[in-house]
Amino acid sequence: MVRFELFFMCAVLVACQTNKKKELQAQINPKETIGELPVYDFEGLQPLLEQKNATTYVINFWATWCAPCVKELPYFEKLNEEQKHNNIEVILVSLDIPSMWESKLLPFVKKNKLQSRVVVLDDPKQNDWIPKVDPDWSGAIPATLIYNKDKRIFYAKPFSYEELNIELNKFTEL
Amino acid sequence: MKTLKILICLGLVGLFGAFAYHSNEIKDGYEIGDYAMDFSLKNIDGNMVSLSDFKDAKGFFVIFTCNTCPYSVAYEDRIIALDKKYKKLGVPVIAINPNNPAIQPKDDLEHMKKRAKDKGFSFPYLLDEGQKVYPAYGAKRTPHVFLLERTDEGNKVRYIGTIDDNYGNAAAVETSYVEDAVDAMLAGEKIEVQETRAIGCSIKA
Image (tube, rainbow over all chains, first blue to last red; front, side, top):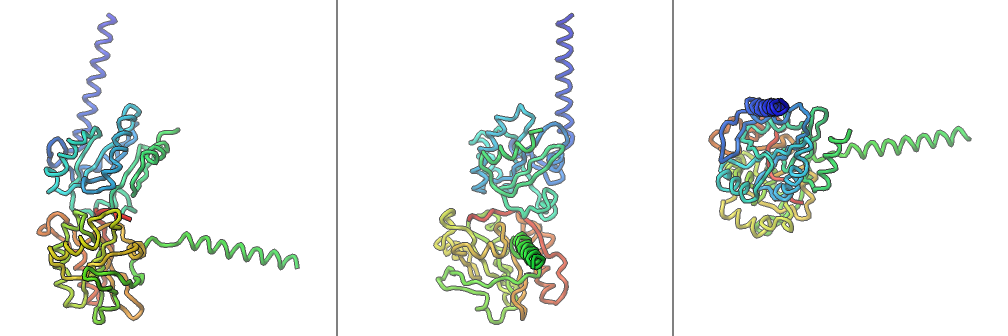
């Protein structure tokens, strides 16, 4: 009987998990995929910037051609690895231009074995969507948005690993 | 006497307060309507170039751009076209590379010369040596355009932003912000869109 209960609970848990995943996927449909990576226009990406749940999201805007972005990327990867069980998720939003997806972006993701979730944002109407990410953003990268259901801060600057943790602490301490 | 001292103290406090307040107000570069500084920067031909050298200009496209940023590269042909179209109307392109070659070696004067030659730049391509000009303008990325109108009071900032609304595909452009702005400026009409944003490469300081 105990065994059956355990099995039942597991089944429920699994079902919930799958449901949650399905829900998230239903929310956002990529306009295409390149390799394993979903490609969004801003409308498609926007739900990822406005999730209201227990997770704190670290959204990093980057590109393979952006040297300071590539430099700080390992800090985001490290953060994701260390904090993924603490309700913190890193999402790397690539702004690589379409002609670089096959030649630069996919090889980069593979070579560096990126573990964080990587998505591609391809939306030429930048003047429309940049202010929706943050009213003060000029559009220069690297740029990072940290948010959870209570708080939202945008950083138009590169990070060191220490600075990243200091900023993240502002979101996680009670 | 005592009252006077108190009054003087209060006055001083007020004065310092005003200074402190004022220093908080220091702007992060130019806004629309500000007058932009002139400069004297080295061109790829070795000569120094200033805005005041262009005696007959009605204005300028001061464009912060570089060799190494893919967005700058994507816009090179459009910047050349802009210069060809508007130089004869009195508004030439002045391109300035704001990057520090010590950090980004491929943005040094030699690489600038080569890039300008390969692409056939029809405009001055200047190096912001010492990196004093781009912070004064408030350029944040490459490419970043400042449209200036020459007036009796100075070079007035009329438009700040990107070139058009499609970096990836010149053929799919729906709005050319810079052309709309300069056409309105030359016609003496109101510029509808005075500021735009775009993704670009951060400036390597």
